[in-house]
Amino acid sequence: MDQQQFYDRLNDRMLRYGASPLDQTQVVAITASPDYLASYDGQVATLVASNLLGRLSPSVQVGFPDIPIHPRLPWAGRSLVEHALDGMRAADPFGSYGTRQVTAGDFRFHLGPDGHNTVIHGSGWNAYIGPGPSPLSPIESDVGIGAALAVVLGAAHLFRTRFGAMTESFACNAWDWTDVPKRVEFSPVEVSLGHVMTAGLGSVGSAANYFLALATRDFRASLIDHDGIGIHNITRSPIFTDAHAKVDMAKVDAVAAFLRRAGVEDVAVDAVALHESALWSLREAGSTDILISAANEFNVRYHIEMGFPPIQFYATTGRNWQATLMRHVPGAKACSLCVFPPDEKYAPTTCATDGSTASQTTVEEKRTDAALPFLSFAAGLMTAAEVLKLNAPGYPFSAERVMLGLKGQPLLIGTPIPHRTGCLCEGRDKSVHIAAVAGSRYVVFVGQAEVGR
Ligand SMILES: [Zn+2]
Image 1 (tube, rainbow, N blue to C red):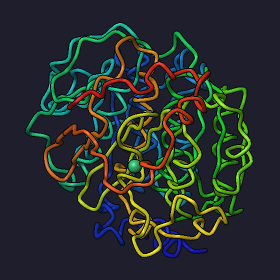
Image 2: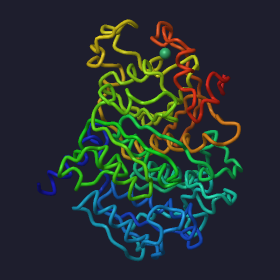
Image 3: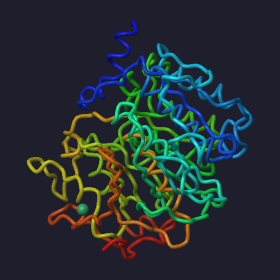
Image 4: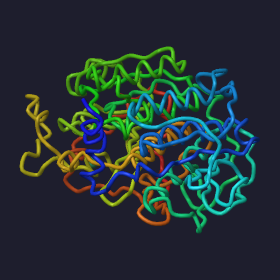
């Protein structure tokens, strides 16, 4: 395949979204303040920035000095610069990626609280983009979520404005998802997350697992997806590469290899759709602690909801430059089918038992599979952030649904999810559901009052 064919396929979903690729002659230079570069948050920022910018642009230069990867990160001790460059080249073998000092004419993507006239800075759960210096107070605990979020916001700004200056400032936090930074010192590494099952390892599911692994390797992973990796998948997933696409590797296998190399010891895979998965259908009651439901084919939400899921998270990317995070707690009044109803014409009845529902489409599934790279990263990051907060006292801190809009200056809006009258969950026995998740780690949230109403 020649370069043009590769780029046509690489950017296919971006073009379908109605956006055009960035000018490839404009070099993006990633720089970082020295103190920030030495910190965990700063290194998360450089890793995510190189990963995401390398997928957005074929011309990226690393302008920060090399340093060993932080002991709290996967790949600890390895060269940070080599790791960043290897990742970019693996995603786009035709791109121009290297290291050099920043020069006039580069678009500078500067990470840290200060050191340039505009900065991209995250600390703890907080994120800031705009003129420097950053107003965020330093947070002691190594969280990385705010740093990654700041990079996503900065990349969205770069893409939206076509390398425009960040003249306006924006600050927010990933704790209660508001535009007011929070002094929260909670670190997600103190307690195991438990058993995290991901149904759907496309851009959002793979990104969620990537961001989880940057924060902690103390969880057990089960991965379910029937699909293989194509070139059009590369730009929206932080894990998928050209080498994966060349052999049409199963998405579950690529994510499993990533997690194992990062240090997650117990990873199980099932390369089939959820309704055919033994990992899902034969799981013992209470054995799955968290479900990341990032699939949208084969009427998957019907199979999930009828299968009495544990606490469930996912985020969708929308047509209007937004990523929307959802949380469904067993026993809450709205389920995922309240949000994404099965197609009316083929709506299954609660007594359907012949498996015919597997082939029905949902409203969600009919949307085109198109998104922008930073939207998929945002959706995966929001999902991972929510999973990482589960062990924090007082959880949850936000409404069941949180929308991050990136069409203009960033915007965060939390809203409750209303029950949809006539939804299949009305016929679901609440006591059976609660019994089915008894023993799972986050059963404490079952039936509790919802935040945001
Ligand atoms: Zn429902």
